[in-house]
Length: 309
Image 1 (cartoon, rainbow, N blue to C red):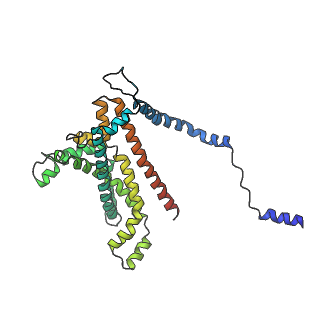
Image 2: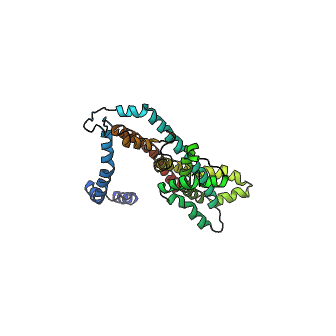
Image 3: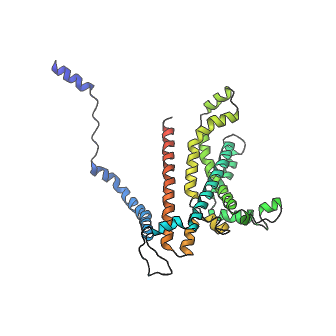
């Protein structure tokens, strides 16, 4: 009886999973990746660590032999300097304006491309094209072909000789960034629209819901994570905008469009304050990391939502 009971217990026991390899086996599997990891660390982290070191020095290139250690004084200067405060405010305004209008236009274009019509693939390709143009080329295009007071497209259509860049510098930069980044938002939101269940939409139409009710109560909630993803990724890239400002406005008139990256450029190559510029660069990196952290959380939650379906 005891033997039969023991055999019965052996049959009912769950199979024991095979033992996994030890630490040595795991390191053997990871060894081929170590050269790439070391290269990435050297290329990315060593310059950043050197920048951290420079941010603790009072180093002006006009006094190359005088580099005293000042600790966190450069960071205090970054947050107290009126020029850097103005640059920080401009960075927020330019980034928020460009991201907001890009999302609104991207959503409208995504809704258009989500419908079937003749030549949809051609229209989609044409709408994506601005995102493929180099930022400097796009800025030059808008500065000369659109905003130029003598032969620009705007004055050619509406008449007059208004200098749009001098009169509306922030709007000019934002318009250029929106034109270039709207296709990026459009692609993200179009992917979200095409992942929406058509059966649910048809059921809503059968129940008598109109287009606005479907959009407000079903499409927008479905696109929430895609909207967040587009806003966060766009913010990560646009907070570092330099090309458009350098090409179109040179940070002017005055400091009207000087953002943090352009102010870092001025501090480095005009004031020659390497320590202060390094501290401002570290602040920009920290702000970007904060935004990127939220972006990664949104992306991970998006994939979890897709896997649960």
